Image 1: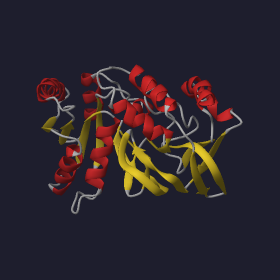
Image 2: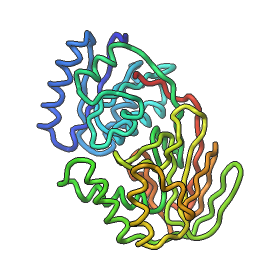
Image 3: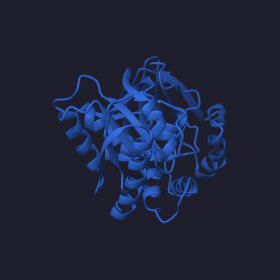
Image 4: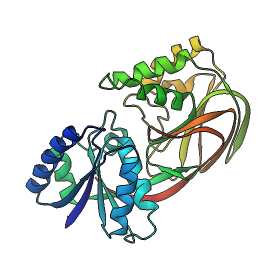
Length: 297
């Protein structure tokens, strides 16, 4: 059991919401027999800053209370801290819309149950991906998928996983193929491609099993790319991503690799764990870092 934990809570830009959730977490942490220091974010990217500061202050357990984007900020914050505890353990209180990584780790969504898991102290080591200097724990993509991510951000008034589906439909409506060169450990492709989705785990967006065979701790990145598909073809393919059977489509290729490089024209956004961190990239490099992260499960 950790003695004391630093908790970074994503307020979703709503301070009153954050204060209400903070009170719930503090009660649940106390009931679980833990002590905590809880801080609230107040803007995008603030979780990264708070995690970097917590690592520099010597916290050995840092908890992300939020969704996959919050986890991504926290991981990048403490892994890139100039001075930090020799090894920091990540905790998760799932409070996002999709909670893909938490679900793949088998974590409960209820605050009280999640805090009891933190107190139990059981850990697991998982791999991390790295794309253009940004760590990701669950998924990353170029092409259509980050376009969908940007559409998702514009639909904040809609709650739940249906928001991701509507964003996918909106993204497909404006889809176009990119000219890509994709190179990996055992192969290469050059030509028109609609998307490249890279998974450390099977699911993204709460419903889409883009890389259904991916495992969090196998030392590989799974990725799929789709040849330059038309909008009707993409719309027909979309329902198959809910089960992962899209990987059997003749215009979809599934591969596993330790390294992946992509050159794309015109420039494409890049998303990592559902957060767009580059809006116009031409050269994208991926690698896997095996067993990099220790996480409370």
